[in-house]
Image 1 (cartoon, rainbow over the protein chains, first blue to last red):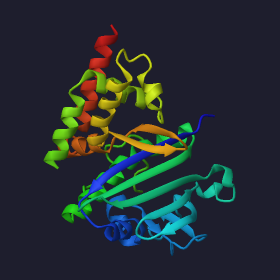
Image 2: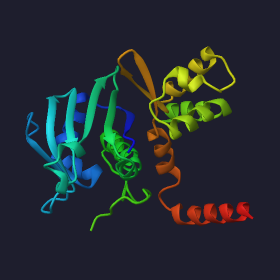
Image 3: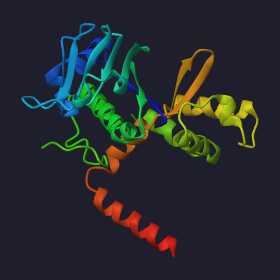
Image 4: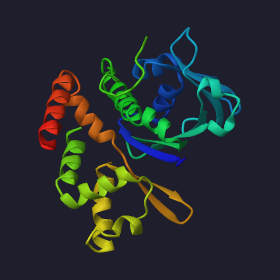
Length: 153
Length: 106
């Protein structure tokens, strides 16, 4: 099966520190992503993506952690956690480009099905992150327009 | 935002550039050489169009060895969609799109 790589870029009027915090703080990530990102973000640590108090929807390991510039994690379905061949490495690169932050998300090793699951989701996540950091607000129900995106229970 | 939106609309206001985005939608991670094939324009012209798309953030690039690979970046289009369309209109627009598709099939 063909494996895909997707690259998403957004420019945010913010600082690298605030973007890093928004990606790695459970409460803040939950505000624009619905699900929370939880980990101590040390290399080798487990990270989870899910609703608080519920079983996570995505799990993985921290591969590289260089705050506030670069974060690399693996993404797995929880039932594939012990099968690294299914891991989708995801890289966040945070660059200061003169008063703005360029955030690049590179998600690799995606199967056709993975691609379908994420290709609508990432633009919604990144748009909402940008809106939150620039205005302090978020878009209500950011994933409503995303076909096939798993909705909150 | 308005400056960013201007760049997006200007970049999209060209059939050749939209064709480049179509090609990246079909197959991500193409090189300049691959994209220039069969475009009916010089490699230099394709390179200039790609620069405009990249400045509008509609194309993202990454280096792999000596190659520069191009990816369709849908985030700016999503932002325009979210701003004007997503809030209320989605079900009606879906119905209209389905109707159009059905009528055009006949």
